[in-house]
Image (cartoon, rainbow, N blue to C red):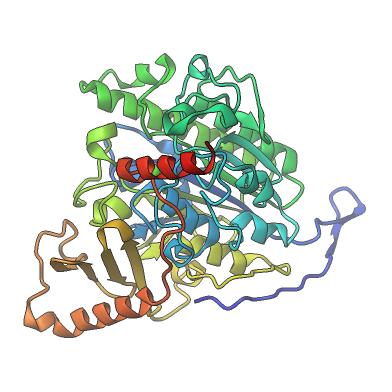
Length: 474
Ligand code: CA
């Protein structure tokens, strides 16, 4: 657990000898922060994890010029709760965000509870400019809109996904959209207002991200770039499809085109950082919000077992990299498990100004691990809960073992030796100590968890939700 640190800074005057004048540097040298989140991208679908049929040279730059995390996790196996964990730096089950929210602009409770600070709120307390681009999925009600959750600017959409071609955006405003399907067809919005957008969605999101960086290069900023690609529906333009004639499977070809569009966007963004002269002091994180649903979007989780929705590795073990040239040497590989919660903790620990953090963060600063300045891997356990099936999972942060508990199922895997989780070691006596340790850790963690704050996207729950709502508002 990270202790809240308060850093004070002083205005630094430097002699800009080149110009023979005295310049005042920006108030501090706080790093700029960019989080690039993709949606439903498989572990194996980036070049830095060995992907062969989809080149991702720009995404790979983040890993090659920084650090690749080979054991990078997210806090849930589907979009909504995973984003809630990332955006708060806290286990979402500790504040009841335990399901994918139902798209319901009328409902102030259907999303990220107001008790929670977002990462944007946190960095804003240190004077950062903030922008969210792309998929929100943390509440469609006006009281949960990104603009009231710490983001100065927002360009994107509020639901769990979106269609990619502007001609399909036939619903003027998100408040008129009925259910999740309707939300996929709304016009893209800027700060709550529909805009006339003509570009392929992924290109439009990249353009906005680049423009924000260009305009704010002189001031510390936080950019949350949440692509909905390569989440379904599988839709790509000829520009990107034409790069993948070598892929025979149509689904995989379209998926590849969508990933390639993201990669182009990442390239433009990295270029803009260089043009603006802020590349070295900008932290860029890259990760996917959960593992690939291989059947749905033709993603590939490689040797990992299962995929999206599952708490085997394929659902929660994602492509994960970080670049910060000022502080991280190029070409690092970090095998120590990290989790998306660590992003908030790392940001807070590395901002030099005073940062106000209201709630306890559950991650750790990864910088000492990445730079090898700590001797021993921090002792911690990573946790997951899937409420509706009563599954509880724990993984050692400083060891190879992972336990999965369900009513009628008890499993233990050594994920270092058996990353595909094929040999259940739970009953083996030689692992009694670690098994008992992880079970006890889970029992203690479970005491901190809340009941879900809302019903979710599963059909039965949605039916129940609309039945209750219709009763309230006839
Ligand atoms: Ca997702």
